[in-house]
Image (cartoon, rainbow, N blue to C red; front, side):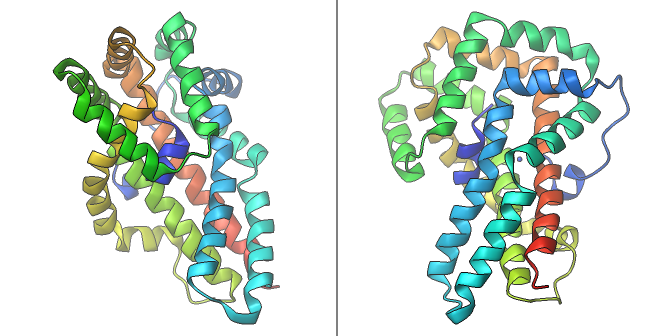
Length: 277
C-alpha cells in the first residue's frame, strides 16, 4: 500500500459505502489487529494525519484571511486536532475498526508476507518515505521522469501495482475526507452553527470525489514510480502478487474502510472541540 502521507498529499469505495458497518466474518481481536498495523507500517503512518491537518489549517488561514480572530481560531483548531487526531486517539480507533473488519482466515498469509525479507524491505521503505517532508509536486515530477525512462516491463509493473493497490480510489477518498474535516473544522471554530452533519456533506459532494479519483490516477502512478524506485522488478512483482491475492485484497479493503471511518469520526470530534464555548 502507498504511504498515508502520499495519499493525503495528492482512502476505496464510494463515500457512503465506506461508512457502512463492518461485514460479518471471523473477526480478530485488537491485539492481532495491532500486530497487522505494526507489520504493515500503518501504526506509524496513521499518526501523520493530525500534523498534516494542522499544516493544512495554517495554509488555509494564510490564503483565507480571518481578521483579528485568526489567532484564536487557529489555537482552537490546533488544540482540537491534537486531541481528536492525536497519535494515541487515531491508533486506538484504527485498531478497533481494523479488528472489526479483518477476517482471521487471511492472517497467516498476511503475516507470512510481512515477515518475509521482501515484505519487511517494502514496509521499511514505505514508513521511511512517510516520515519524509519532501514536496509532493517534486516527487510527482521525479516519478514522471522515472516512468518516461522506464522499461516497458517496469511501467507494466507500476500499472499493475496502481490497479491492485487501488491508490487513486484510496487517495480520492482520503483527500476528500481530510478536506471535509478541514472545512467543517474551520467553520465551526469560527462559530458557524448552521453546518449539516459531515455525512450529509459527504453525500452532497460525492460527485466531486469521483472527479477527484479520475484526476488522481496519473498522479498516484507517478508517485508510485518515485516511491518504489529503490525496488527491483522482482521485488515489485512480488508486492503486486501479494496485493492481488485474496489476503492482499482483503487487507486493502479493510485498511481503507477503517482509515476513512477514523477520519470521519475524528473530524466530527474535532469540530465539536473547536467550536467556541
